[in-house]
Image (spheres, rainbow, N blue to C red):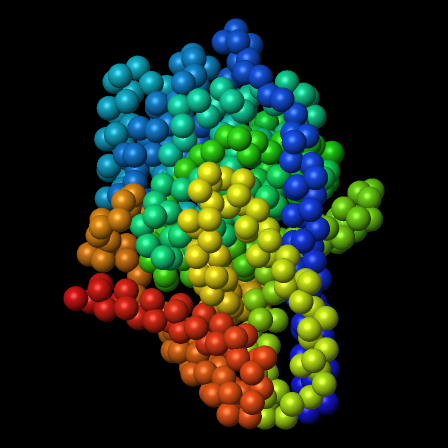
Length: 478
């Protein structure tokens, strides 16, 4: 039991480090948020040439929306090139070719580039498109994003500084009010984009290009070694390689580019698995270079925490597995864990700050905060499994997140061909919900009332994630 107690304290202490870092970033955000540099738009004569890349793979239900949004960008036509980088193997290929041809006939400089193989996945498609790109700058938009018409005009001016290699805009949401799940996801992303990214930018640390809704200087991509497919998060990988080469990144939280949130729990799980596994792969690849670099020590520490942040999921899972033995054998460690309470406030305060920053009636969205944290706890098994797979298999395939073109509540997706049934992990999640539920009963039976809220939170998290997967699978089969 001593070993379990020691590991329990260690897991809690490591989680507290990440919690305190969230608190630190929240404080940086509040103290520096008004120091964002003013941005002005360039006159037409000074606008650089831009290639807009649209990487797609089997996106039948959003391809027309995507191309229409790209062609609606307010930018001089003689300085704008649009590439549809299509790796599709289904009807999307013919649909994309038809919509591109229609816009070509209307005078747009747009190309449909289809690869017969999917070598390198998204990184391979971007690198192949780069060989035919004509722009000084390269904008990237994933299939589920709809940029506002002024997206390019409001971002290209940052490249007047020759050291700027990338500009990232803030993600917004097309369908955050669709369901409880999309509301939880929206809050999680808002915390990252409204507070964390802003704090990292204004605080002087490295920034991450988030795969979409951003622009790159072409020479920056080439100088950093181009797009590489040895991780599942090619965006994170290139971001660090470029900044280690001395390029500066700019973040524009005032430029919002909305995207479609996964409406299916198993689509969300797939997305989170890819981000978790890819993040760990990048950590293994980048951290040795980072620590050999001339970056300040505090930046190295901050970036190490950022690159390894997904290890919080196996730590959460471990704490869940410890619940029954710790309740059956009460030990002083449980009292000691109160010391970590301050660290536990880090993440909630970060997300609360995002609500205050983005929504005038922010208090109306407060109920989403515990919901988001329930989901974060409930997917700990899913993401822990992904971390293990990504560590063991660096050639782990890139599995896309299904998009259905959903924007409003009431729109149906269950009959969609891209819908995913629940994976086998759902049964382990149900078992975990029951296991922690047993610990809750034992805690109440033995009068350990202080543990009850925490145990109930864990049990509800696993139950919600597993229950939603099974309920949505039933919708598909019906």
